[in-house]
Amino acid sequence: MRNIQIVSGIALIALSFTSCKDEKQENAKKTIDAYVTYVDSVKNVAADDLKADWKDVDAEYNRRAENAQLALADIKDNAAETEKINTSKVKYEEFKNEMTKVLAPPAPSPKQQLRNALFGEGKIGDDMSFAWVNAQNIHSVYQQFVHTVENNKDSYSREDWDEIKLMYEALDSRKNTVEKEGLTSEDNRKIAGLKVKFAPMYTLNRMGAKSDETAAAKK
Image (spheres, rainbow, N blue to C red):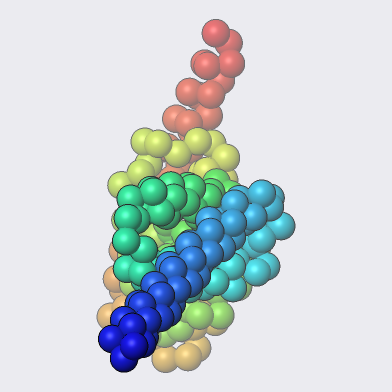
């Protein structure tokens, strides 16, 4: 009788262990299924509609992806579940690439690209403020401006040259203010040399660009 009780007890323990193991495996599969469902639900939303909440969406994805990966350890034969995770991972990465394009700032206009090249990224915007130019940096500003024009003079259109002239005159106007703020005679001399270099380069190439455009229009 005692032997029967012992055997029954062992069987009960084994059954309980199996039941816990099955429950753990079932929960693991649910975690993976929840991850797959999340990815599919994200992909079904238009990228533009997720812009405002994208950081939260991506953080939630990373949390679910990590949990799904950990859940694999609780599944004995997990080849099918691994395939499900990998498929969803590929889907999400493709969608994330799409979101990267949506979230990217718009490309600057050709005019803004020219200003960025002449003065530095974002230094001169639509307000055309030169307040950041002072007695300490104005020589380097002229230097970058003139050298940039010299290096790219063959690629500028007539409209580019008109914009360059506008920017040059605005910089000159700022120089008149900066001179009263302690511009050194040495920097003033170097700037004068750059101005002498710029003037004929502008005149010659502006005329050449206009002639090229006129000739192209006649074809």
